[in-house]
Image (tube, rainbow, N blue to C red; front, side, top):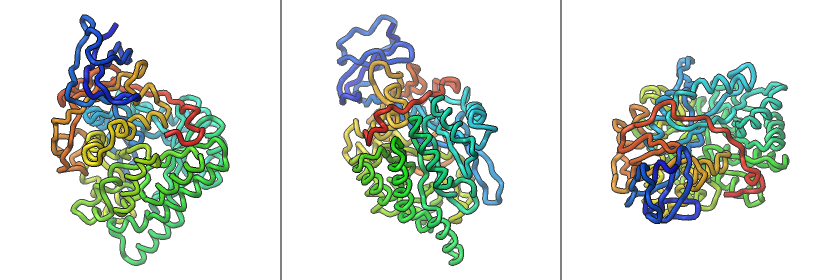
Length: 475
């Protein structure tokens, strides 16, 4: 029985953009038909999206909710939980987020997963999944538990090649242990999601700048520099090539050197996929010198205009497949609490404006096709992360996760109208469209700016990366 019909003249499907009716029964899309070609079933609601853009719900593959937040005095707190961030997400057209489970935060991997689920179940207005994160010196029993987690629906494993800052010892995984994890990934159809920087270069630059008294965060690009990204990316990718069947997702690519390394590996047939962040693509290291410049920072660091141009080029040739946020939702006071190269808070509150912001920058300003834009904010993440075609596509059999963008809503972003923090790094940016309706598995959860969902709506998503994603680059 069809419950709902979404009718639009600009509907973005995997086959292209056209005028279609989307027929929904329960949580699923049951058919896509030419606009007006079928009568609206008796009792079904018709949502007329004429003059608007109908697309699959956004997917943010890189967020941190209820996450450890270091303070300059050595204490720590937590970022905002899914209760807050997920509501902001659906207001902005994102219907699925992927966070992280730290394997070290439990007696074993299964215990860590169960504890992390308590943070999300019954606390989220959007669907969610978790990357498994391994850190530091890996216990001898861990690889076997990682293999079990992959088979249980957690197929992506986060690995750090650096401690990031001198105070965060214990994040970096030694190269030999990375080699062991890659063998587990290859044997179990798992994927490595990598924070890749050269720890020797990064820590050397921290020491150098501290000795020189240049500790202000405005010097961050000298520490987390393009050479570090170049060396680390190529080392990790070379290791992946030596373990047949290993696929990698390079997180928060920030430099042209990283883009080049990904592009060259893909040309050799290595299944490598790249992610950048909206702040890297729209801000440069010069923005650190502006008022409250910390609000643009996440680790590694903002880079130069030339690096920024390379990131945009990567979205066109396949080196950059996804645009994420690295969401860290906290107050402005928390975001500004550190002002040194070694204590500045990473991440920012960006999950709500991401879909509209990237529409504005991609389609509105740069002339990207709607399909390429949807790939970068939704479909590619679904394909890479093992959610497709359940997520990231308007097609029969998919979850009815739908967003309607209104190109007549050219609002100027202001923190007072958003739902996740008391600041936004995108304050004052004029949009070319804004979501007027968000649907999660057939339920309208936001309409006309009004939240109609609940924190019980979101469900954990079992994931399995498609076998084809390991047979050379597919996107």
